[in-house]
Each structure stands twice: as structure tokens, then as C-alpha cells.
Image (tube, rainbow, N blue to C red):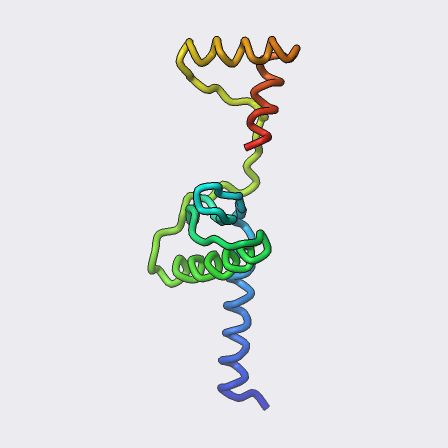
Length: 128
């Protein structure tokens, strides 16, 4: 026998599944913050840095709850939907405009290490 409680429970389960599906589409970023002395989590473009913790796992758990809550708010019309970028790919190239003096300094550092400017900058960025 189908009861009102059964229907309500099914609707809630469907809603939770929908939120989880939509929530999974947002990339999560967890980074170490020297300034805060902890890991910090964000889920761009939905939310910028929004939680912190002593371990990446703790931040990932907090971030999952926050993202689910925000997705629910979007579905409920309480906040606008962020611009989606599903399946966005990255070419591995970008242009950065910097002062000429900094360009020279970085080029000299790369040369002193026997590396190309590109190799040196990629190495430095990887360390951040």
C-alpha cells in the first residue's frame, strides 16, 4: 500500500539525489594557506574560499556539505545559478602581462638554471 509518507520519503530521496548529481558538477579546490595555517576549500564558480581545516579530508567533508546546501539554494530560487562551465578544457597556455623588469629577472633566473623561461615558470607555479 502506498501511503503519503512513502511518497514524501521518495520525493525527498529524489531531491537529495538531484542535489548530489548537480553538486558533483562543481570542481572542488583544496589548498594549503600559509596565512591561515590550514587547508582552505572552495568550489568555483559556486563559492570562493568558504571553509578551512587541519586536513584535506576535513575540508573536503565541509566543502561537500556547503556545495550541497548552495545547490539546494539555487534549486529553491534563493540564489542565482552560477555560470556553468561543464567539460571546460584547458589548453595549457595563457598570457600574463608583467613589468619588463620582472620579465628580465625571471628570464635571467631561468637562464642561470639552464632552463627555458617556460620551463622555469611552470616549475615555479607547480611549487605554489
